[in-house]
Image (cartoon, rainbow over all chains, first blue to last red; front, side, top):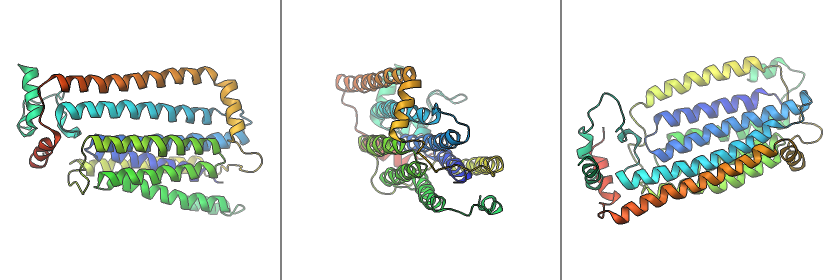
Length: 130
Length: 202
């Protein structure tokens, strides 16, 4: 098999995930795009491991071991990420990334966005600022 | 890609390459639909198609253990977690008009530019490289297990500690939020937040 096939496919998948990370607003959709990027990296690792194990007499199979590690780290990442998103959703009432701008620079802390937020979130924020 | 394959005409596209190309097209299409669809649950279901297609690609690359791990963990566990996350954050079931943010054209430009650069570099670098898929499989379970438990034992154990720490961290994050919610005043539910969400789109 030509090595360009899996390499090009993984490059395209990575850029698809990159678009999703940059363009999506929901935090869970951003996590899905991150999963796509991680899978593109996995495909690259597996393809180059299969190539090197025949071409270079490389017997450590580091590509496949790293792929397994990446899968495990991605599982841990998705668990922590979803826990964080759920905590933010409980406190703020939204999982929209464009609204989570409390630490943004050059912007007054209580912009007009705060008024449009939920009463629960506004109450929580007033409680925090009081 | 096809030009590079055609210039090396002594190896016409084999059956494995054609199968890889077809499954790759399905995978890429499902990935594009995952990041562009406006229905959140459909995005998770297209993600299943993309990850399953990648598992088939691993099988075509003779990495069978990775393929089954992919099916078990990604298609089995991660997508179910994502669906639960969508359910618990009360994602709208129908079309949501604000799924994409305002900078999607900038994102499209960045993604297209990086895709062009990566594909050009990769094709230019590996246009004369072929994977030898004959002989014993490079990624059978015996080979992967032997290498994993002979050469990679210490990272493997460290990874188990990492998974344990991540699990404990997820439990702590979820528990503290729940304790705060029950202790504090009953917050207005996310439906009210969602109504405000519709009204106050930036």
